[in-house]
Amino acid sequence: MARPPRAAASLPQHRLSVVVLGLLLFRAAAKAQLSGDSYYDASCPAALLTIRTVVSAAVLLDPRMGASLLRLHFHDCFVQGCDASVLLDDTGNFTGEKGAGPNAGSLRGFEVVDNAKMLLETLCPQTVSCADILAVAARDAVVQLGGPSWAVQLGRRDSTTASASLANSDLPSPSSTLATLLTAFSNKGLTTTDMVALSGAHTIGRAQCANFRDRIYNDTDIDASFAASLRAGCPQSGDGSSLAPLDESSPDGFDNGYFGGLLSGRGLLHSDQALFAGGGGGSTDGLVRSYAASNGQFSGDFASAMVKMGGISPLTGTAGEVRVNCRAVN
Image 1 (cartoon, rainbow, N blue to C red):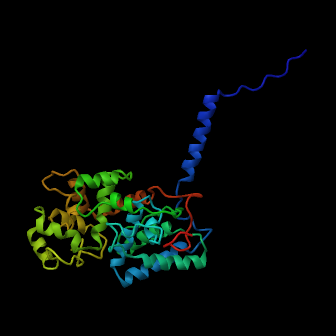
Image 2 (image 1 turned 180 degrees about the vertical axis):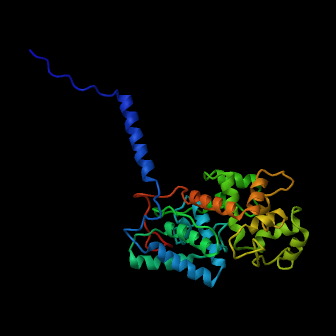
């Protein structure tokens, strides 16, 4: 009697499991990738133009808004990833991130995001995520103030959760030391170069007296005349809401002036001056000097770092949702 044909050899069970696991991991990794800035070309062709128009108008009316929109994106990405969790309002049974220490009374620009979202919901309902609006708005705000442009990676979705506790623990404070800053950024997958370049965002915007009061009265690495000029508007106690520019040389222009200020001991925040110890004693001194000498090098590194920061733990695929209202889950 003829033998039946032999079945094709099969992989051992353990090898088969490894292959299947590898395929699943590959699919998960591919699913988590963001796409280029053409992501909305088919689903919402006017998306980027709409955001840029809203941002340009807002920054034209109030140049400070440029720094505020950039800061919103940073404060979003450092907490749970770039998922628009920072935009969620508190409710009776939900506590968001807006009231956390680093955010309370200082985050601005929510209405600009609302305006962009309202227009986009009219043009392309439930298509453009709030997280993508934040990423694009940050880029457009920098460009509006004379800074570099970059291709924003898109395809983020919005979270249905937020974390006040992570906002309090993961966002660097104005009193951070260099070691603390390096750790905070490293924890998000960002290098020392990324950290120094992203700190250059302080070339625009203002800080409240409460955040630099201790520095101008107690720090020893601050230029004496600079500290004296700030004390007049920032008393040692009492109201701490008065503002001072983070870069006195060009507070509304995105350039490398911030780094020149650090070389002179005129960093407004303790965390700013921590980047430059002087005398070659700090691990980031060389970068600060390079950026102070070359706006081109700073702009290039800043743009690259913004792309990396915008890729911190995004929700993609079917994770999360596309909110209809950026302030509330659907």
